[in-house]
Image 1 (cartoon, rainbow, N blue to C red):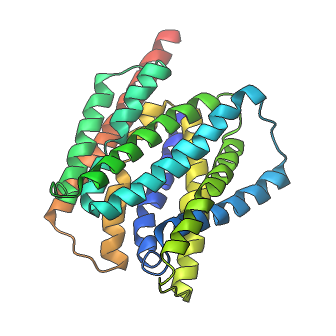
Image 2: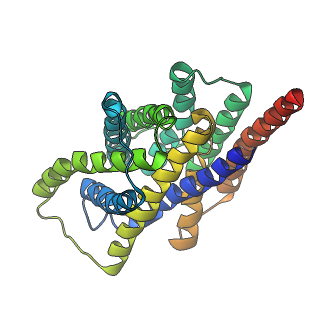
Length: 301
């Protein structure tokens, strides 16, 4: 029970940090090209993680597990997040957010197929409530968005979901901090050539490094990437991947709320209704799991 509660705290912090990423990006993406921001994000996070990695000692990865670690960095951190950025740019933010809310569906399916996690009615109800809440908050997106942008958003969801299941598998053998560090560094090197190409084709881009941009980059790298990815991977190592995924839609709620508080964006009654469904879905999952644990403990006592 205590292990589950700690994982829930980690997940809440993680998805809240990812929710704040949308606000922090407002100060950066108009000043620096998209994939260059992604490279700087991983570069800053990589420095922070590598510093603590060296300080706390390294854990050797067996040669046969290299493919899993590379997959986490390439499929999860490079392909999934790169496709998410491109998909958002080519369609629109609300529709991309709605598609991203499908992550729990694919994570639960992959977890059932690959990890043999149980597909319970509790999880299904929680996912449906979370997706409905995200749909209400985003207004259902815009179905007239570019097809390529929509497809890239789905590529992002499938890639991230597959990566999450791989992390669950690998972190049963290795420390989550080690896996996160290797994954971020691999993603940084994968993103570098894309960033160089982007800078070449956008040579006329008006770069402005004011203090808000610099602070936002540091925040994105340290909080939204290094800390958030480490806590996400730690949570996955502690409880089922499918149950972790049910916290994912909270980030849409946090991003809208912070946009209202910090950026002065409009917020309406749809947000309240959507937030109720999202929170209800998460609480239903948590309380249902606690009831299951208590029942199991009573049988064993």
